[in-house]
Each structure stands twice: as structure tokens, then as C-alpha cells.
Length: 393
View 1 (cartoon, rainbow, N blue to C red):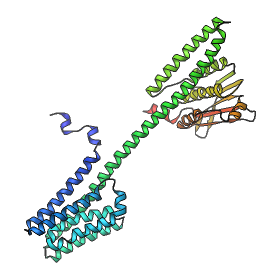
View 2: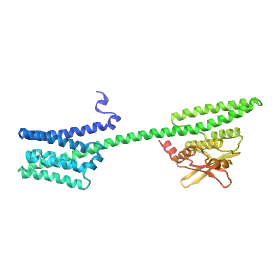
View 3: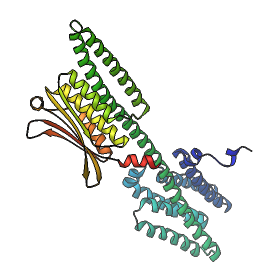
View 4: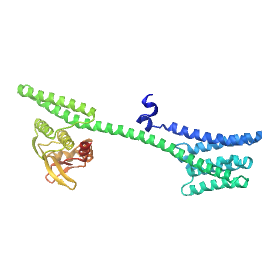
């Protein structure tokens, strides 16, 4: 016998379509209605009463279906009082003609009371329906055994209708939540992809543009130097291509030292005097990647949105309230141009950086200091919590 014949896999155990859940509810409701109709038929009613029994059964089934259908919460809040009153009439008026053989339909009414009426009044109404059913049996002269059976049957039917309805609604809510989570995951992935492409292509294209302009000026006078710059352009292009492919794979690890060296080379090509001082000691891979991204985006903004002549990149070990930190400062003297254009970023770069830094428990600030230099400051934990969790797993 196949293994999956008796023991369904995880997906089969965890997945119950909302349509199937509600179909189970409908089957149970149909079963209760059929039992009530068969009880009435067993008492040998006349043709007119039999038609009335069938009509009442169909009407009660329709009302209970509306009460139990997932997604009808607003309808029940608005019209629930009227449908409940109609159910009361269809439950007790036929009892005048069919007696306690129709008493089993009180379970539907008891379940609807729990669904429509707010707690704790719903339980009072539930108990009242059960009591009325038992009283009707006593007044009709039914023995205490049959009366007790009718009362217990009403209680069980009401609880089954209520419980299955709530479970069916819960299944529908879980599936809606799964769909929303899937949509959120897709949106987050799109945002990550767009953010990474912005960081990668912004820096890479800026560097290629600057070095291409420099090469164009050097071709006629210094061909050897122009050839070196062409080699550098080729390397930057290959690195950009590799980075874009790593974005598609979902994660890319960047080196803080390598990114600082690349930034120094690009700033030099743009005739910006760069000073690099990384004295922060070893940094976790995740923190190093985030700081390298800060350098890349910061240098891109310097190249694109300022007329800086000097740029300083410093990284130091620091101590914060939550433990050891690494503090990276990227500053340039192009703040006057920044004030004139109104933004050092000119796009979504700083917003993306702030999101990256805050995701690992850090903080990012940007602004002009007292000396007129624009300062981009990133403080991140030396070993982010996300890095610890990845290592532990």
C-alpha cells in the first residue's frame, strides 16, 4: 500500500480550501434538515402539512446558510435581527402542527443565536431556546427520557452549527491572510530588487561615466594611461554585472575594504581628493555589507549631486547602549551645491540606506555640519541580531 494512502503529506494536512470547509458545513446542515423532515414524515402528516414542512425546511436551510456563509459578517450585523426573527417564526410556528418531531430544528436557532447575538447575551438566548424546546416536549406529554434526548440534541446541534461555522470562517480568514502575506512578500522582494539595482547601477554607471570621460581626454595625449582606464572600466562593468546577478539570487555580500578602495579610485578619477581611514577592526559580514552599501551610495551622491573637492570616509569602533557599534562617516565639502539643489540624495538613495541600516538595528543620519560639510553617518551593531540568528541556525 502506498505510504501516502494512509498518511497525507504536510501540504495535504495543512491546506483545507475554504470551499471545501463550507461544503462540509452545508452537508451537516442538509443532514439535520433531512432528519427533521424524515421525523415529520414518520408521523404521517397530511399532504398540506407535508408541503408546509418542506417549505419551512427549505426556508430554514436558506437562512442558516446565510448565517454560516464566510464573509457575511456585515450582512449579519445589518440584517441579522430580521433573519433571526424569521428563523424564530419558522422554528416555533411549525411546532404547533408537527409537535416535538419538529423540535430538532431548534438547534439551528440556538446556533444562530451564538452567531448573531453579541456575548454574553448570545448564551442567554442559547439557553432560552434549549429551555423552550424542553418545555414544549413536557407540555406535549413526552416522557422525561425523550424530553432529555430532545434537549441534548438541541444543545449539540446548536454547538455543532456554531463550531463548524466559526471553523469555516477561520479557514477562509487564514487563506485570505496567506494571500495577503504572499502579496506582501512579492512587494518586499520587488522593493529589495529595486533598491539593490538603484545602489548597484547608480554607483557603477557613475564610475563608468567618469572613467570614460577621463579616458576620452587621455586618448590623444597619454594613450598608456587611457589603456589603464579602459581596463578599469572593464573591471567595473564586470563587477556591476556580477552584482546584478547576485541581486537576482537574493543576497550579495560586499567587502567594506574593497568598497572603500573602489570609492577612492572613482573619486580620484573625478578629481576629488579622497581620504580613507578604516580603523574599526573586524566586522560581521552583514554589517560590513550594509556599511559597504552606505559607502557606495554616499560616493554616488557625491559624484552626482555635489561639486565636492574633498571627501573623507572614516570608520571607527564605538559603544552604544546596545553594545559594540561601528560608526561610519562619509563627509564632503560640496554642501553649498546641496543647499542650492535642495537635496543631497536627489532620489530614493538615502531612504533605501536608512531602511537597510535600520533593518539590522542601526541608525542613519545625514546633514550639513557647522563647517559646511555634508556628513552621512551610519551606526550599525558590530554583530547584528540577524547575523547572530543566521549563525545559530
